[in-house]
Image 1 (cartoon, rainbow, N blue to C red):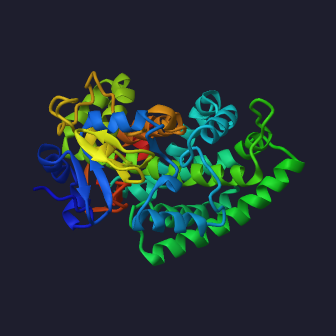
Image 2: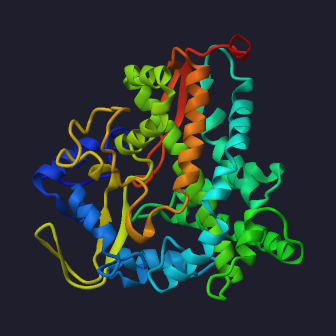
Length: 406
């Protein structure tokens, strides 16, 4: 019988072997170590994501020791149980998403393209023709700069923002170490204090930034409370940074392993948008999401009890051969790329348009600057948690001097 163990080194290097065994032997798997159900089939994950009535995003619907630990962690947060678009159900979720969507609009995101291109080119301006460390040089700073500017954060504070974001992201496991929980709580306290000052300033003197838009946005005469504004700003910072950073890192690794796909993108840049969707499917930045059963419910022939924790493993769903032919092959021209990497249903990722735009810009610039893309001598190293997947270090070679491209 297959067993799900995300804490062994082999999982960090390649979780898809475990997923494949589980999908074949026990697709709705009860993990004793995690105290949770682990889903690895596309159809099961999709059903759970679409059924918000039976599968809640609010941890208060959970039961058991792991659920108690999650609830304790949230109650210990400076924001307490303040609902967010990620951790709430209707009607709270409907109200929050309606207001936030008025501030964080597709138009606002689309208008960022020229500036994001400028940022990406500036980050690569001093990249040597030889070795280049992708994560520190492009994948990490690009989303930090973009989101910081969106929120109206001055450049001198960006490094602190990345440190705070990393500390909070480290707790995106069902099981979290005590030291990680403490670091995340301290980071949240510092972010609440920081953004609290910014929100107060924007109420007095609004600017052309997202914080000002969040403060003033209305839906049916309702506005976000100050705690809700703070919670969304922190969510955007953490989720926006981690998702895009991991997407750029994972996608680049995939192109290194299958260089003919990189060449297809160079030969036909119009494939880039579709190619990024395939990168999202092939090696998802977010490997899984957590839901909590609100009633006894059947999933894939197994009975899930009220209060049980359910892990919909998006990375596994995206490699399900019942949904995707040759799922372990990267194909930037794949026609059906209905991946679950941004979720589905009412909790579909609000920041997906921004992540896609940043990735399109990053890969466009990267493939231009590195016509002979290959792994550098500095090698690579996997980072992340078992729910967030991406490299912490990725050295590239095969680039050209900027002067050679001008």
